[in-house]
Image (tube, rainbow over all chains, first blue to last red):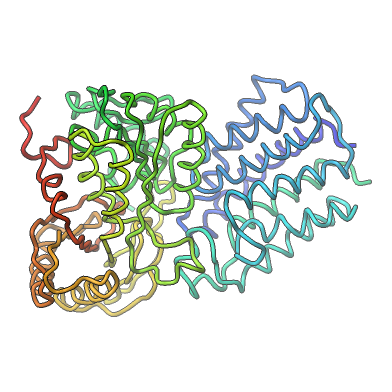
Amino acid sequence: MLTTTNLRAWLDCLHGRLVQEKDQLNALDTAIGDADHGSNLLRGFQKVQEKLHDNDPPDIPALCKLVGMTLISTVGGASGPLYGTFFLEVGKSIAAGSTAVAPESFATALAAGLRGIQRLGKAELGDKTMVDALSPAIDALLANQSPATAAQAARAGLAATIPLVARKGRASYLGERSRGHADPGAASAALLFDCLATATPSS
Amino acid sequence: MKALVNAPENVVAEALEGMALAYPELLHVETEPRFLRRSDAPRRGKVALVSGGGSGHEPLHGGFVGSGMLDAACPGEVFTSPTPDQILAAAQAVNGGAGVLLIVKNYTGDVLNFQLAAELLAAADIPTETVLVDDDVAVTDSLYTAGRRGVGATVLIEKICGAAAEAGKSLADVARIGREVNAAARSMGLALTPCTNPQAGQPSFQLGEQEIEFGIGIHGEPGRSRIPLAKADTLTEMLLTPILADLPFRSGDTVLLFVDGLGATPLLELYIVYRAATRIAEQHGLRISRRLVGSYMTSLDMAGVAITLLRMQEDWLGYWDAPVRTPALSWGATPC
């Protein structure tokens, strides 16, 4: 079972990794974007930490909603609405009042989050976006694989973005010149699953 | 990099405070959430114009807040779109009962945040229309990209729609005019140097002494190709050729010619480009009826230029000439 405590550990881990890896994400974004993906996400997850210091959401849906709304109102760019919608949709997919959720139900909720991202951003697998890391990782969880395996799938998805030509977002303006660079959104999505593996008990 | 900065994380906040102090009669700056609004907003019965986008393009958009142009502008962090709560608060603050027109440049972040804001405005029963600006001909393959970027036409749309709103046009009419202006405008830019986001501290790309980046966007993102530097006349022709072919502009068309500096290019050079552009336009049989030369939509400290050509319609001439009083554009209006 995943508990509210696991999910808060997930968010703590994400914040910590973003502090450490902000500059690396910015550097990836410098190559094919505008050099601020790490700074923007860190601003959002920093605010999440501050809100969680002052609030104690009673259940998992409330926690996810707080994270989603905070990201939407602090991150900006495309990643704010996309990651914000992800957490909002995950929260909506879990029954109100739940303080623990079975891994299968959590995988289903993450899949709903991914659908929210795709509805808003209209990206498909292979467009060189965060979807390329999120999708294989969530598929692994849906197939009852461990969070660690899902994290590996996200890393493989990230690596697979390197040879691709971007078709969505600001990198798409570079056309062929976007080839040879990893997608910053896929890199932050891989962090999401690294931290999920850290924060959840392996079954 | 050398810059007049106190703390990189405070550049937007401190610049907005400075604007508020410099133009107390024209605009107010709200901080939670962050937006600028006309000091006399809301204007009862007038369609309210709200735009916004990443900071670093000054004077766009905050410099166009005032009578005859925008009612409110929502600045994001440098090169980062504003968030939906900023846009919602700005729209609610300036809505005078005739609805709100959102003017949005076509970048994924801007589109998504304004889309979420428009949903919130709909939920709050505020009639809202959106004009999406996408005039950049440097992006050729719209099918496999996020589509053409919104560049110089944004300034022209904000002026023309601003005047139409002042003239009492309905929300539907102002939105239609905005879309028609966008559809009749084409732009292309080039960079002589990269720009440096103060929060990143390093240039967005490297360019050799004799290299330029052609087909540049306004966020320091590299353009479509890197080419050798050439004379101003040659580069102006390289910018105008795809613009002319794209609409296409035809002999006999009446146009507005906008030569925009990207931040660090002196007016001396912009006039040289304007001179070359008028010659090329006239060779194509175009009649330049209105013009704008200066740095109105910039990319921080980037040196470079962008050209926008707009095929004018008769009623837009009057809207262009109508009084405007904002920090960055001001004519025909009596000081208040």
